[in-house]
Length: 271
Image 1: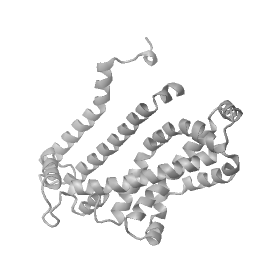
Image 2: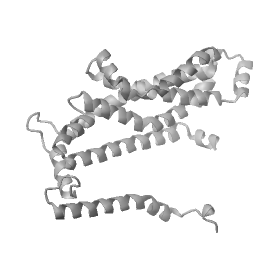
Image 3: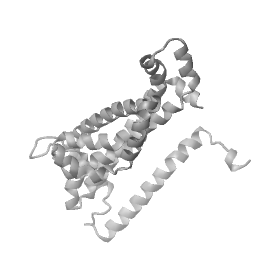
Image 4: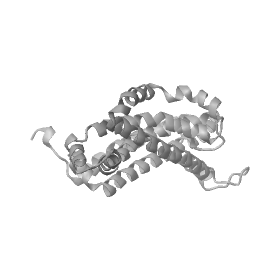
C-alpha cells in the first residue's frame, strides 16, 4: 500500500502524537544532565528538580513582600487583559467583516482599509499606544485589539463573500430587508467562522500581551518572565513559558469544542 493511503489506527495516532514531545523532552533532559555534570551552577538548562522548586516557590508559597502567590496572581492579570482584548477584537472584527463583506457600499471603503491596517506591525506602534493611552491596562488591551482585529475582520469578510448568492436572493424574495438579512442569514453563517478565527489569532494575541506586559507592567506572566531574565532564572522562565503554552492550548481546545457544540452543522457543511 502506498504511504499516502495509509491511515494509522487509534493507538498509533496517540503514539505518533506523543512521539515528538517525548523526543524533545528526552533531548532536553540529556542536555541538562550533561551541562550540570560539567558545571553544577549552570543556569541555561535547569534540571527538573530545580524547575519543580521554582514552581513551588512561585505557585505554592506566598511572596514575602506581597503575600500573594505570584504565578496565580500573574495568570489572573494576564487572562483578564487577554479576555478583554479578545472580546473587543471579536466584536469589532465581526461587525467590520459583516459590513465589508455583505454591503458593497461599505466594502469599497472598508476592504482596502482593513488590508492596510493588517499590514501594520502592532509592536511597532506600541510606544504610540503608551504615549496616547498611558501605561495603564487600556494600552495593553488596545495592543491586542489593534493587532488581531484587522485579521479577524478580513477573515469574516472573506467568509461573508463566500455565502451563496442564492440564499440572499431567496431571503429577499420572502421579504427580508437588509437588517433581517444580516441577522437571519449572514450572522448564523459567520459565527462559527468567528470562533475559528479566534483560534487562529490566539498565538498573536498572546504575543502582543507578553510584549506589552514586558515593557510596561507591574504584574502578569510577561512581566514576570522579563523581570527574572536579568538573573538568568531559567528555572522560572521555562515553567512560565510551559504554563503560557498550556493556557493557550486550553483556550484553543475550548474554542474548538464550543464551535462543535454550538454549530455542529458547520464542519459537515464545509466538508
